[in-house]
Image (tube, rainbow, N blue to C red; front, side, top):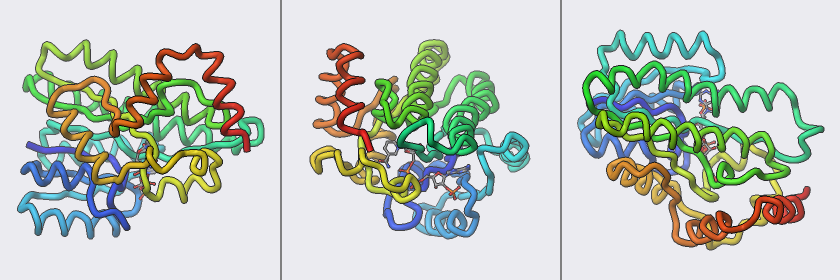
Amino acid sequence: MSAVHCAGHWSLSRHRYGHRRELAHRGHNVTLVARREELLQSLADEISAKHGVTADVIACDLADAADRAKLIEKVHRNGRHVDVLVNSAGFATGGRYVSSDADREVEQVRVLVEAPVALTSAFLPGMVERHQGAILNVASTAGLQPMPWSTGYSAAKAHTVAFSQALSAEVRREGITVTALCPGPVKTDFWEVAGDQPIEKAMPRLLWRSPAAVAKYGIKSLDRGHRLAVPGLAVRLLTFGGSLTPTGVKLAMFERSMRP
Ligand SMILES: NC(=O)c1ccc[n+]([C@@H]2O[C@H](COP(=O)([O-])OP(=O)(O)OC[C@H]3O[C@@H](n4cnc5c(N)ncnc54)[C@H](OP(=O)(O)O)[C@@H]3O)[C@@H](O)[C@H]2O)c1
């Protein structure tokens, strides 16, 4: 069994656990993908030593279509049958959309939308042929409703949620599961990369989850074939409340609470 984990160093630097460790722990050989090769290699060495699995490293800028094509070719050349695909790489823009960096907004769509779509198209046919496989797409609670001041990010994550759910219904009978993992806030480098985001301060402590807990929940949900997985009881309750609230009311609440 092989798993391709597309970035989301949900553990790489300071964080001690992640999807990759969870997958390796279950005996999957893993292919680790992100841009910073050195960090990936040290994680791969640690995973192989600890779990006795093969951990390949492929440096790739997932925003770049040519780089993605090379990634897909390398995975095939390495002779890996991908049974689990984890699309986790990401970052967030935020703030007033009209003043945001146009190139960064487009890059966000490339990494959060284009890359998971391209990789799914590349690896799903093999899963269908073998009648087994699982795809874990890391979305966000931000994808469960439109969020002013996080316009581009919440829209990209809404794509992930809709794409995962629709696809899961298409391939369910072929023994393949597709899960959209929708975490609330998690303490990772994500917040440093995003810069000063008012939403970070607006989030009560109760909602924050550790990377380890989120990774564990994600893999458990993948095992169970859940279409949608929201880690943390408090976040789940909020999400449920949100689903009962009219969109206009939610927009007004987010616009006010997240205004920079
Ligand atoms: N942290 C949160 O509060 C939170 C909440 C909900 C959802 N999420 C989602 O969780 C996922 C993982 O984020 P995280 O919290 O683990 O953030 P993180 O610690 O900043 O990790 C993001 C990862 O994405 C990789 N990446 C970014 N751009 C890339 C690119 N162009 N090509 C290849 N890899 C790229 C980065 O690796 P390189 O820089 O080496 O490429 C990094 O390892 C993201 O999709 C994020 O939207 C996070």
